[in-house]
Image 1 (cartoon, rainbow, N blue to C red):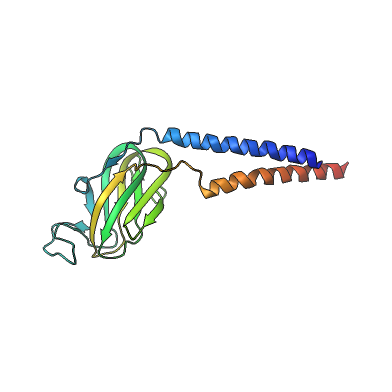
Image 2: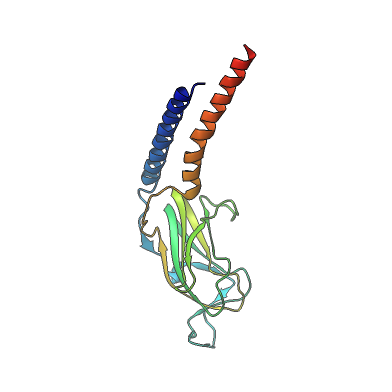
Length: 199
């Protein structure tokens, strides 16, 4: 394959990659429609391994603070709505360890395959943001605020579908869109060279 043809092929493939990237952003924007921002009240959740009626206060945590009783405390909200993310502000007497968000789409058990990944964290402010690339219909949402037992915990704010600052592609997606056209063009060039050598 001549250099001129290779450059043309590469240009066409990068144009296709650009179109694919724009299409992906458009798909995400559409999938996020209907994901209304709302606050989730701690009192509306079902709790596991958490108590709130305790007689003691400790180091600025009053008797109304939540206390985790083992290493698997969590709160569950029935949302039955479209979800693209969750943001929570946590104050804890112990370091916040392994915060997680699970979801179900029907009446089903919790699964590690149905989680909303942690995309941003600010431990100093206690703010943790979980987000999906697009919106999905969710039945129940589970927040594991920490894996520490015996921690005094206050959830100052739990926001469903917090405002999205950007619709940008992830670093991995950008890398693929930059590398795949070049790899495809090189592959085509190699195949053309092999065919030419066989003649």
